[in-house]
Image (cartoon, rainbow, N blue to C red):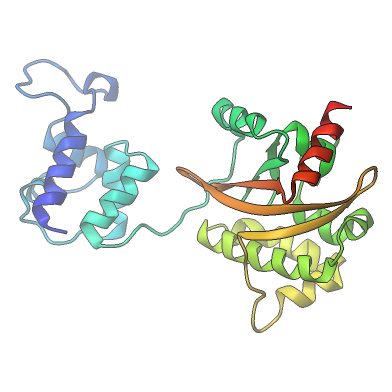
Length: 271
């Protein structure tokens, strides 16, 4: 990183903003976008120091100042991360904002993945979107209250989850490990604490796994076997992916592990 790269990035983002939309006069401007002093005003920092940053003369700003500049320039999460990499050589600390649902584009992605069951879950492992295959194979999420669409609550508190797993103990260990890592990565430690407290109170198994000195390993790819109440055993290649631009969401896909499993799944969805 060079100070000139940081200055160029700040100038580029400043010129993309509409002064009138942000309450500034758009008259008598020789160049598009906000003036430097207007960005400084929005960020509550010294106009002189902001000017030095754009000119490559200022020292490295603090993370708090960078956050104010990012807000002043109305940066997206990806642009904010790039700003931190330019200025400090590291990404910003994760900040969990919680999911407010998914976009139509993400729902269309889930739907096109049929016949593979697929869901989108939050960092607190609440399922917020799913496709038709997930409803038929995993759970009828639409029939549940939103607060009950939680993977950990189902796994540790619902007897049906134990019946569906061939090796419940191994699955539970892997789930707790992944849950811990994803919550920390998303900056959601405070958000998951009420769920952790609830499960620790209601499930001795969860409490023991959560309190282990060496946490269970997390996994993002594995082969998962489940017992379906109608069709019996299914084997799936389980994969979890980060949703681009959303630290609070993960896409989980269950891909049938064999051609026979795939055909039985198609037959199930066609029935």
